Image 1 (cartoon, helix red, strand yellow):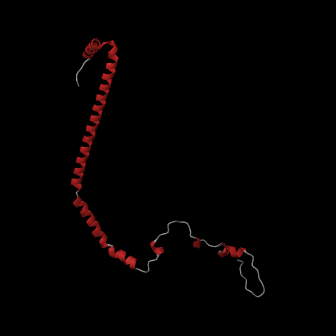
Image 2 (cartoon, rainbow, N blue to C red):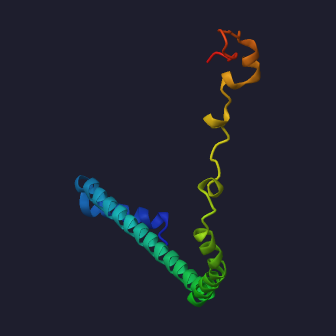
Length: 147
């Protein structure tokens, strides 16, 4: 940046030693070092801020280009076409809602594959259980299985 070589730095250090003396030179070197550090940090922050601004401008430009290619008119046309397509099937939906023959069992499918309690046979209703139970006869009453 400033194109300062080692020889120039050595010359500046010797002149500073002669002018300031050995007593004040360390504190002056610390002060100069802190100033250089602050300047470097400021330059780094400035570079980062400039990079952020450039990236943001590039993104804005890309958004403008995408907005131009997509266009609000095209979006509106797509929505209108979808609405027209939905209107074609509106009468079918109205017929389904007006139809009294549709039951909730026809409309809503079963959510699980587990058998319902009504579909599970009771042990006393199966033919095997009726044959295995002993039958009792009392007087003139016909034979009936035990409950």
